[in-house]
Image (cartoon, rainbow, N blue to C red; front, side, top):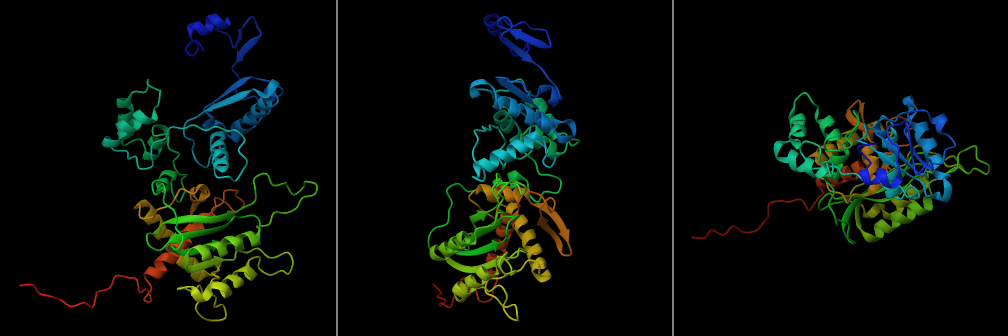
Length: 427
C-alpha cells in the first residue's frame, strides 16, 4: 500500500499504514487484504473491492466461490454504489478461471445473447496480425503495455525471442492475447485477422446458405457465403437464453427453437439474395407433437418452395433425394465435411476468408475444438454437455464448402474459360 498511496492521500485521509487492516479517517474507513476464505467474507458490505490476478482464481482454490461472495456483498452494499475492479493477465483458455468466465460474460453481452448488466471490460491486446518477430515486437509492446512504463521493452523483447519460451506464452503474457486452448481449432487472433470492417452482403448478391438445426439444447444457425469473394456472415442464430428458467422451477416450460421465426429469416434470404445452394442439417431432435424430426417439415417446405431455383441439390438421387436436406449423421457427408474443415482452416490462416466480425459467429468459432475421425480432423464441442456452442462455426464451414462445390462444378458457366474470339496478328 505505501507504493500505491500518494503522500497527499495519506495525509488527507489520515491513513495508518503498515498493518494488515489499514484504518483511515479516525477508524471510519478501512482497507483490508484478504486471501481465499470466502466464508469469512460473507455478509460484508464493501464500497470498493480489487480482485487481483483473477486468471489464477479457479474452482480448485475456491476462486469461483470467492468471486461469487464478493459479487453478492457488493450488490447489497449501501446505496448500491459499491464497485469491484478485477485485474488480470490474459487467461489460459479451458482452465475455467474467473478471468475466463468474465470475458465470456462480456462477449455474451456484447453479442446480445444476455442482458447487459453494466460490466465494463477494458483490455489492451496486440492486434491479430502481430508477429513475434524483431520488426513487430518493439512497437507492439509499447502499445500493449499502456501506462506500465516500468516494463523494460528490451528485456521483454529478449524473452520473446528466447527459443526456450513457447510462442503461446509470449503472446499470452507480453502481447496480452488470449491464446487458443491446446485442442482449439483456431486462435482468436487468427479468426479476427480475417475481419473486414464495413463489408456486408448486398441485395441481389449470389450466395450459398448452410443451416444447422437443433430443437432446444444446441444452437440453430444460418450462415451465408457470397459466391464472388467467399465473404461469410451469420444471418441468424437461435439458442436458449442464458437466464432461461431451470427445469425444477415452478411453471417451467422447456425452451424450443422458434421454427416460424427461422422460416421467416430463410424466406427473407431468398427474397434478398440470389441463392445458389442451400443445405440444411436437420439435427437429431424430434417434434413433441408427432414424433417426426423437429425440422423435417420445414426443410421439406424449403426444398419444395425454392429447390427448383438452386444450382446445387443436397442429395441428387435415390430414396433420400432432396434439394435441401443434408444430414450430417450420414458417413459420406461426414467425410465431405471433414475435408471442408481442412479447407476452411487453411483459408483462414492464409487470409483467404473474410467476415464481418459477427460476434456470435466469432464465439462459436473460438469454441470449436479439433476432433479426429476416420477421415482426419473435424470440429466438435469441448464435451457433449458443454454450454459453449459451435453451431455457427459448422454453418460457416458448410457455406464455404457449398461455394467451393459450385465453383468446381462442371456446370459452373461462370468459370474463366478460353474465349472464342479471333486472333489478330499486328505487323
